[in-house]
Image (cartoon, rainbow, N blue to C red; front, side, top):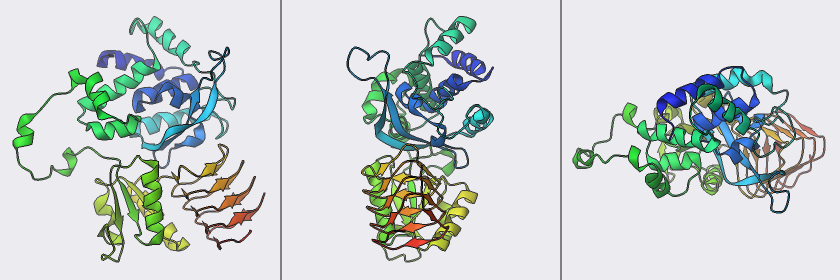
Amino acid sequence: MLTEQQCNLIERSLNEDVEPRKVAAYLCLHMGLMLSEVSALRWRDIDLKAGTVSIAHIIGRPKGSDAVRVAEFLPTDDPRVLPMAPELQEYLQQARPLYKSEDCFVMTGGTEVPAFYPMQNVLTNICNKYHVAETLSAMDLRNAFIRRRIQAGVDLYSLCTYVGIKQPNVLAKRFAEYLSADLSSVAGSTAPLPSEAQPRHMNLLILGAGSQGHVVRETAEAIGIFEKIAFLDDNLELPGVLDTLSNYRNYLEAFPVAFVAIGDNQLRRTLIERLEQAGFIVPVLRHPTATISPTAKAGAGTIFEAKTIVNASVNIGKGVILASASIVDHGATVGDYVHLAAGAMVQKGAKVPDGTKVSSGTIY
């Protein structure tokens, strides 16, 4: 396991003569990404404004005689939207000029699917230059991230969700030497810890508990990365509602991720802007049954509901609702805060203006 001194040497080297492979290595060290995940990451998956990284694909090796040389770009079985630390946001902001378009892969800076091991040469050079260790791999960087988070007091459940490990006992066994039992804490007061002592969880706060709110909740549950999901709504009689909409700021620490589930386009715009100003992470939610082209783009606060189809080279704005079975064809543009109702279709190359409602079954 890499020590802090070794991690500091690696980090220093990754800040020198920054190039795409070093950016990928930095993400492994600071987010615990697997090699297969960081290899498939494109610049479009990084939202510097929201402070999130979307893990939607992996690079895998196909079976056969060319398995060592040929890589496949595949959807991941564990899609998730991960918040990143401020220092990582700053690093990526400085690295932004390395990528000419949103379609560039972080690992290479080009648009061709990367080979499976392009980062290893950089890591080997770091070993040779700084004598960090006998060998150094992406897995070593991932394990260093996990070890650091455990020592920082992050609970195992949240950490497993973040790094894509489904069983906490896997971490408990692998990192046992960094875990310690505090029996006095179990026998102590049952009062909640002060907010500053609590680790931030991947909890989702949904603004709006009506029909759209429950669609958002089911989509979030299907994605499977959120530990807790709760609602704010001005109707406190609705199930699962914690408080009214105006009190959203009170829940930033407990629910750092928030999503607006309100059909009124103008109100949805207002609330998303307020959430971002308050410091919430406003993600893009994609139901696992939605079919989204890897070349499609979408802004914060957009939801792709079940069975949605979005074809190649589509641009979708912020706060868009793409309801179940809606279709957006090749090269279309959907503006900010648009609502495509169930079964609506946007034709090839069409442009839907901001704030438009496209009714169910309509062809735009």
